[in-house]
Length: 257
Ligand SMILES: NC(=O)c1ccc[n+]([C@@H]2O[C@H](COP(=O)([O-])OP(=O)(O)OC[C@H]3O[C@@H](n4cnc5c(N)ncnc54)[C@H](OP(=O)(O)O)[C@@H]3O)[C@@H](O)[C@H]2O)c1
Image 1 (cartoon, helix red, strand yellow):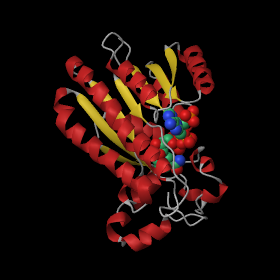
Image 2 (cartoon, rainbow, N blue to C red):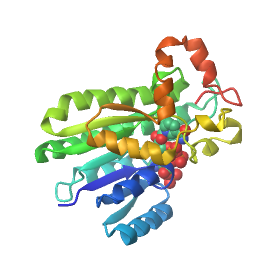
Image 3 (cartoon, helix red, strand yellow):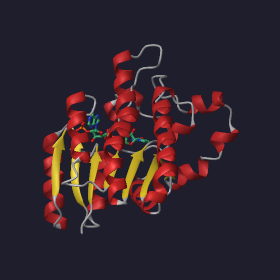
């Protein structure tokens, strides 16, 4: 029987790439983001190309009623979700001392509370069925001093490790995917000033990161850094002082990710 995956933040970027790659495996899809038109377009493309069922479920996950609707879809025993991908995210451009507290709250909700809430909705059914996979998109920022964004991503890595250790023997695997810089809409949405001043070589491949995330979740790995260039750099996060790591993550307008 074909599996079904629910992917948040599937309207563009890494989430859309994950949807395209998961669809090639014959997995049915439920696509979640705010932009319903983009979701419908992708769902139609993937239905036509792979003969799968693909449904658009538009939702602003920082709005409680929308989040409850998506959680209810995950908990629906009549239409099981076998794979949950918590990918939706954004960054706050302003530095900590000038940012709007409401933006910080929405960031923490989307990056940390939403994956927890949706995992909480999905896990009981997965345990009943004896199998299930959760892929939480975190970031290498989880391992460096990168402001409130890194703090929220660190919470997601910690949750993933904990749930994976607790449930893997019962067939439910939880993986934190930690990408480096990706050339998606993420940075442009934060404003031109916020584009990282790093050479082209430091941008990871979105297709490669999606592929490595899917492969890690299939193998039941709890944390994967992606792609290769960030795996090479990862040991430096233990060696360099926070002062230097923090400077490396400072962008054109002086703010942190
Ligand atoms: N880009 C990077 O350099 C980078 C690096 C490491 C980790 N990441 C992480 O990778 C994930 C994907 O980011 P990306 O680079 O693909 O960014 P992106 O191109 O900006 O895509 C973000 C996705 O999240 C959705 N989204 C944003 N706010 C939402 C909300 N309130 N409710 C529901 N969906 C929402 C967006 O769709 P709508 O606008 O249609 O809602 C979009 O589909 C994020 O978790 C991000 O933190 C990114």
